[in-house]
Amino acid sequence: MDKQTILDMQHVSFVYDSDRESSSYSSEPTEPPALSDVSLTVKEGEYVAVLGHNGSGKSTLAKLINMILTPTEGVIRLFGRDVTTDDFTEEDMYDMRERVGMVFQNPDNQLVATVVEEDVAFGPENLALPREEIRRRVHTALAVVGMTEYAHHAPHKLSGGQKQRVAIAGVLAMKPKVIIFDESTAMLDPLGRRQIVDLMDKLNHEDGITILHITHYMQEAARADRVIVMDDGHIVLDGAPREVFSQVERLRDLGLEAPQGTELIHRLRADGWDIADDGLTVDACAEAILQSLGLGKE
Ligand SMILES: Nc1ncnc2c1ncn2[C@@H]1O[C@H](COP(=O)(O)OP(=O)(O)OP(=O)(O)O)[C@@H](O)[C@H]1O
Ligand SMILES: [Mg+2]
Image 1 (cartoon, rainbow, N blue to C red):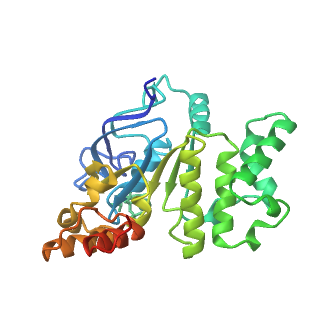
Image 2: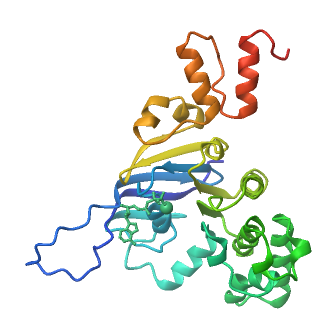
Image 3: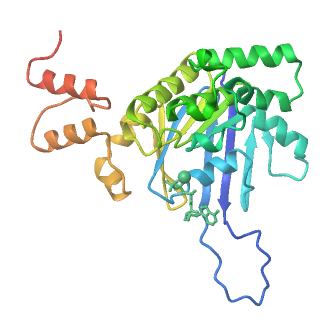
């Protein structure tokens, strides 16, 4: 069966000051659009990484998808519903927001309660679900993120990575179909980061949750099935990690670098080495180099 298109953006632009009261006599120049003519479709179950230098429009894109912002121009359909028409009520928006969860950069800004399990219960409680259902959801969500033993702890005493896992549990308790991570690993130490990306992989592969992962870490983006690169409010590259990262020079022009392994193999090739693999991961890179030296595995 065909996978459902869950996100369909057509010619979407967004200008931050468009809501401001503006007199037609004003000589003040309008802000350049933060997003310009972006068209993007994402199907159920996709795992998409979003890259782009600072200010390229990644967070604006995320906020439009999560209906925190409304497009200045263009149409956004979520699960087949046009969320940009007047017919789309506030009630519809809450319904949609259950399906589209969002995890931000700073976990401290996302935790609301003084006990972990109460924090995770916050969303479902707002849905006025039966107590037993709330308890079940909290229990499951904490188990999925590996934080069951901290259920009665105070969130502010946890490490950054643990806090972020609690924040993710809070999103999972809403049973979302899509989760947008906006640089959710940026403030974490390497172990915390790895645990969060491992969790993203698991949510996608095992639970079929569609993932949009905005990140500055190329190695993290390489784990997705699809990589989108933004520049100056536009989507400029969109493809499998292998396709996108093989364009080493183009990425450099966009202020980005390919993952280190890919960069290394690119340079070795330029020096005349015959290497077949693109070395998206450190292991793949090491193996490719060993192969070309005749030292690879069978
Ligand atoms: N609240 C705001 N008011 C006015 N302009 C804004 C606002 N937020 C972002 N912008 C501008 O919109 C453009 C896109 O910003 P956005 O935050 O979407 O970029 P980003 O790719 O998420 O950057 P970063 O990597 O730094 O998070 C930038 O030029 C930015 O300065
Ligand atoms: Mg951002």
